[in-house]
Each structure stands twice: as C-alpha cells, then as structure tokens.
Image (cartoon, rainbow, N blue to C red):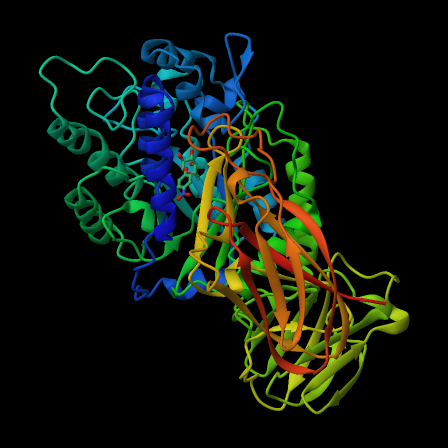
Length: 613
Ligand code: JFZ
C-alpha cells in the first residue's frame, strides 16, 4: 500500500517537471484523492452490534438528494461521473444549487415499497443519505433551512416515513451523514462559495457545532432505533471531531454502529474503498464492501451499466467468502421512483439469495483465503457451501486439501445427491447430467464434512480442469514491489490496478505457491503493462527445472485518465508465452524473474495457467 504513496508523489513530481501550470490542477486532484482517501485497517471489532452486522451480510445503500433530480445534467450539459458530485463537476454556484431545491418534488417515493424491495432483494438493512456533501437535509431538521421540508414544494419527512416502514417490516435502518464536506455551508468542509470575511480553518468548529452535532442528534433521536451511521470522507478533519461524534452516537444510541469513515482511526468496522471486492482475505475482523448497481451512486440518466442478477450474486458471495459484508447501492430518481433495471436486478438476484440464504446469512468465510476460478466457498461449522459460478468442463469440480472427509454432497436447491469421490487429498464432484438443466443462477453444492475443514495448504490450486489466473496480489516478492495504482475513470469512479513492479535487478523474483492437482502440460500467458524504457526486457518464468524465456514490449498508453493528472497509465497486454510442463503434482513454486532488465521492468498483473490439450 505504501507504493500508492510513491506513485502519487511521482505523479506530482512528474507534473511539476512537465508543466508548472498543471500544478494547481494536480494539487487540487491530490487533495481530492486525500479526501477520498484509503482506509486504515486498524479497527478493533468489539462492538456487540457487530453480531448482527457480520451475520446479516447484505444491506441496501441509497444515494438520494437534490442531485438525483439533476440526474447528471446541469444547464443542458451532461456531466459524466458520480452524480452526487454534480455540484462540484459543473461548478454550480452555491445559491443556484440551493435554489434548485424548488424543483425537488419526490411524489413517487413509496417508503413501504422500497423496504419491500430491499426485503425481496434479500437485504437486511437500508442505509440512506440523510445529508450528502451537498449539505441538503433529506429530513426535517430544525437547525437548517436547506431541508426537504423547508426548501422544496414537498413537505413530508421522508426519513420518518422510511423509518416507520422499516420498523413495520423488520428492516434495519442506517443513515449516511457527510460530517466533514458540506459544500453549501460557509464554514463546512470544501465549501463551494466564497468564505466569510476573516475566515480561518478553525471555523470548521462553527459548522460542526451548529449543524453536524444538532443534525446527528436529530437523526439519532427522532427516527427510532438506528442500526448504523455511515460517515464519509473525513480527510483533513481533525481527529477530535471524530472523537466527539463517537461520544455523541454512543450517548444517544449505544447500539448504533459507526463505520470507519468517521475518521481519526475510530469506527466499529471498516468500509473498504469503493466497489472493491478483495482478492485476498483482509486482515480485519469486521469489514464491508460498498458497491453500486451501475456506475454512479446517485441516479444519472445515461448510466446503464447495470450489474446483472448473476453478477450481484457473485459479488455478494465473493465478499461473504472473504469474511465481509456487502452493501449495494441504488440511486432513486428525483421523483423518488427507482430505475426499472435496478429493481429487476435486485429482485432477480434476491430470488437466488433468499433461496440460498442458508449459504449466505450467518455463514463464515471460506477456509481458503482466496477464491477459485470456478467460484467460491462459504461455510458453517462442518458444512461447506461451494458456490459454482461456472461449471468446469464435463461438470467435474476438484478441490484438494480440505483437511476433512466429505460425508455427503448435495445440491442446495433441491437436496438432490451429487456424486463424489475423495481419493487421498483430492475431492472430485461430478454434477454430470445435472449440468445445464434447470440450474439456478449459481449452483450451490452443500458438503457435510466429518469435521470442520482444516486447510493446511493455502497455495492456489491448479486443478487441471479450469484456467487459473495467479494474480499479483497472491505473489511473494523479493527485489520487486507490490503496487496499487488508483485512478478515476469517469469522475469519482475509482479503479485499481494491482501489479508487481519496480524490479530492482536481475536478482528480483516474484513467487507463487501453487498446488498442482494434475501434472502435465499447461498453456501459460501473462498480463502486464510496460513503459517504453522497459521494452525489450527479458524474463524467465519457471517451475522447478522447467522454464519459458520471453521478452516484453511497451504496452501503450491508456486513454482513460482524463480526470487524474499524473504520469501516463500504461495499458495491460495479455501475451501467450507458451507451454510449460509441470512434471510433479503437489506443491510447486512458479517464479518470474528478469534475465535482462531494462528500466524498472514490467507491471506484472497476473499469470494465467490453462490445461493444454
Ligand atoms: C464517497 C463519496 O464522496 C461519494 O459521493 C459516495 O458517497 C461514496 C460512497 O463515498 O466517495 C469515496 C469515499 C472513499 C473512497 C472512494 C470514494 N475510497 O476510500 O476509496
């Protein structure tokens, strides 16, 4: 993670060298990056309410505010990016933005319908934006005029309606509250207007005392039990403010959970960077991934990149299999109705989730720290649930080294038996004739073991049936470095590229432990990026005495960096390297090392190993 810092630092230096006039833009963007920040994984999970949090697994996130009515458009122009940031993207003057509240009339909002949808989707909690960075209160607040009840033609307190509907339907309710950024509040963080005369940064205190404290008090007083409060973007806010909020929340509703974005190292659980589904199990007890049904958080008219029902189920399973919870966002339109596609994806994925709830709710992480190419695993004591996203060839699936004997195998959907053999350490399941017939989005095979699984060999399994990609995340490195390059695609849409780079010398080596279930020939390909000055570097990929020697090329620039100044981002190339014979089954090491290094070498993203037949 430290590398990200160097990347950013080098981005800054590079921009300085290239063109002094880009400095302010870079500073601005650097500031934003800091504001959005990355998460410290230092939280101690001790709050008693974490019991429900870790059991429930699945929550609905709702981004809804004045920006929803704008839907990504200001003055006839579309601003591509996360819709709730339109005030920032379009540089809308504060007074114009505040006046726009006159257009907000969510007469299609149906609190009961929304809660029923969340239930149908299999979700257990709803977390809604009570106040986002725009500063507008979606609830009836006494300490501001910029509220749904005072500044719009609509005069109902929708948060109250939602709270009542949640109570009636047994749904937990949480509030998102932007404690630091408030773009329409003269003393708020990142205020978008001209600061009042004599302003100093300490005046944040005025905003905090006069708006944040009273509004959070209102939210935790007037709406019944609040399951959690979701703070955000604490970057730059002095730690004592976070501490005060913790005290306030604990004093008003001791059962209420607080997420890590309260800042200052506080919070009861960790909210990972947006839309990040971790490849390796995070080393924290309680965490969540937040994600959205399309690309933007709030409704944007053009955004049709809807996740399919199956994709939603897979993402939920991957998160649960790594020990986390999943919060999936929907962005209602300004009138309060939901985009049809979001409703459809949520309903269809919900059918699967509820039908397979046994394998999700209250389930523990996989005994393996990483997923499989065919799918992933969740567990409950001696029960193991294999979520098969894609059935391997001929309906056969292999897993090695479970450290337990399988007593029974069946399909969770109808309890029908699944054939299996377990010779030595290798379990082989045969879904044979069942494949292709009436299977749900994801088939779940339930295994009953003679004891809880005890995985002693965590190496990535090469099962001889499915192509497996060894990702940079899984490698150990010597003389080269793990790096996480972050950039924005559309505005505010953070993407990551994780790779191994900064190869120091020909002694550097990246190593993957692999557990080969079937000796033989494998087709190996590599995915990497390369700068021009590293082109022509030569490499050796080896497994024991077998090896492939190859040369790497410049991979070319990627054009999607329009919102993130800095050094060019190089595209990833996928190159087929050749056939590698792995003579012995069992534990092997696959290594990549330079034999002639130019520049800093490649950004190595992954190695794909595919049975060669
Ligand atoms: C924040 C907000 O700015 C955004 O509008 C949205 O509400 C989102 C859920 O949260 O954006 C972030 C915050 C943190 C990260 C990325 C985007 N992060 O840590 O990578």
